[in-house]
Image (cartoon, rainbow, N blue to C red):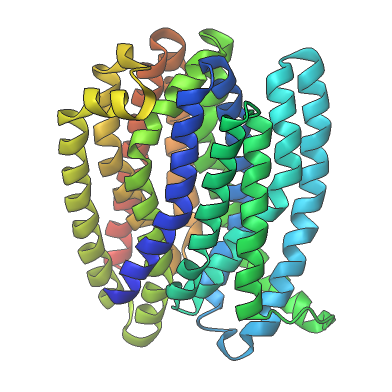
Length: 408
């Protein structure tokens, strides 16, 4: 409970500041400008989930077990892998930004170019924070949160006060805050950046052997969660992407708690499986799921009761025209996403990422086939409904997988 609380604190500090920045941008920028931010951030999340799949998620499996005694050298290999992945990715995003700015939207193109600069700094912070989770010491990750929050929030307020706040400058503020927090964490972790080719090759083989399934799963998960932000401008306009992002901000705290606790749960379940076997792993997972569903029920009630007050407080009354059906659907999303997230974490701990991938493919198929059609015809409400249906389809497939594993 103590370490889980520290994990939530860490996630609250980092993600809470990003949540605040999202709210401030939605409040202070025009819906079209915030829509440009939503589109660029969706692209960043694609890079982020791929980065997590090949580096961070396998680290939570192998770090506390196989490489526990050589963690410094192991982390150094991952840091080198980080730059090998992110630098070419940033160059590609910059090239895309030039094309998008010329032929589609100057605002989106400028946001993507700022993202190309900021992305490596933000993702390195993600990696080093999770390194403390692999050591089951989330308190050190939380310690860097104060500096991150102070720098990011102060930068955004200063930009707004001076009349210079734009989507591009918001991304650069995230990069600056990430750089400072990364230095703090690196000084504590001290990753060994040696050139032991045998060790590097072994780490790469382990991560690719596990991560190739996670990589495919991450792409499917991203498509399920972000495809609507990219397709809504084609059907109903860029402002609707901003509206969808603004409304989903309201369930971000619940999503962040799920992410934080899942990051602690994965190495814990891996150790339980190694020490006590599969049956004990199932028991621990079901307990965690019960806790998550209870929290989702509390969040649902709060969101439905105080939805108008939340819109007024956070956005100054913007987006009130979407206070009915989208909110009902949004309040149900944490139930579906937390269930799928915990079941997926359990399968990862059992080293069955292939089953996570197969389940997510079903959910993604629902998003592509039914979700996009709903978004095209019903706008924001259709997009939220598509996300909900997709998560339920993923959950159903994972439950079928657990039934088979229980009889093996």
